[in-house]
Image (cartoon, rainbow, N blue to C red; front, side, top):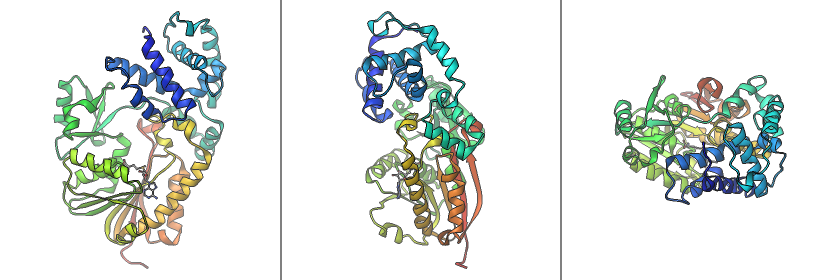
Length: 406
Ligand SMILES: C[S@@+](CC[C@H](N)C(=O)[O-])C[C@H]1O[C@@H](n2cnc3c(N)ncnc32)[C@H](O)[C@@H]1O
């Protein structure tokens, strides 16, 4: 592979914003990729994938390059040099790359790879937390979470089906494959910009990881039901739920952020969905109005996001231990308050995109032991681990509310 100056510079500029200015990687890349209209799919792919790679391996590469944060521009080039060398890419003779110690880079890589926090490129506290929470399983999970994520589509059954969408995309030379056990999923064989296709613009599919598609499956919504999606965000799960209800019944999508619900409404229109109503949670009233009224409630809780590190590798560096304590308290409050919207005999699904037991099964166990939770029993739960599933890490629990208060 030959390195192109403007693509490398765009990568370095993106890294500067992410590492030194604390900007979110996906937002930075969205902007960077707008910079030059002449860039084709390969050029854009190079910038995005290289930036994400260097973000993912920041600690390891910084240790090899012997550089510290905040990274000066020459030091960002040193990180880039480590990436290129380890990926077998010939370093050009530009002034930025003078005296690259290729052999030393490989030697240091072998040496540091013996220690997990370097090999997997983790802050100390996160490595310690992983061991505390998952014991011996941590090794395999963090290894899997450092892989590059597949792109998975969820077919919208209101508009098309898996076979027709697969054929439609094939005409555009976008090859996909079905995934056993995921009836609405299609996995891209190679990365492609699916957002520019007519199929996407017409609402035939959404991009949604396979594990995330399991949430609505376990909730099992039926046409005619009233379902509350209490932490709906921009609506990944709401759209899935509404499509399974065939536009019959009611989905009430709630969130504390109005802008996310606005985006949800836009997506619903594209998806041909008419049975979603959005409600901003700006006081306790929004919840009180629905007490005991929902056939099913989904709590797709805010969480550490440690199950989706493949997609957001910069979370390794942005996440703080104090945030984890706060978010667990929020999960507890949400469970206690929002579960009251389930009607007697109804069901509650609690889900997170985390692999930490303290956010998942322990959170549910503690809820069932509290007064608010003793009206429920745990029907079943699924711990989806990236090392086993090959997809994002998720936890999904299905709880049944008793018919009577006793
Ligand atoms: C895991 S995300 C939801 C993702 C969304 N369900 C989807 O499938 O696209 C969690 C959501 O909870 C929202 N949230 C945070 N605190 C909340 C609260 N106290 N009540 C309701 N929603 C909350 C966040 O704004 C965020 O959109």
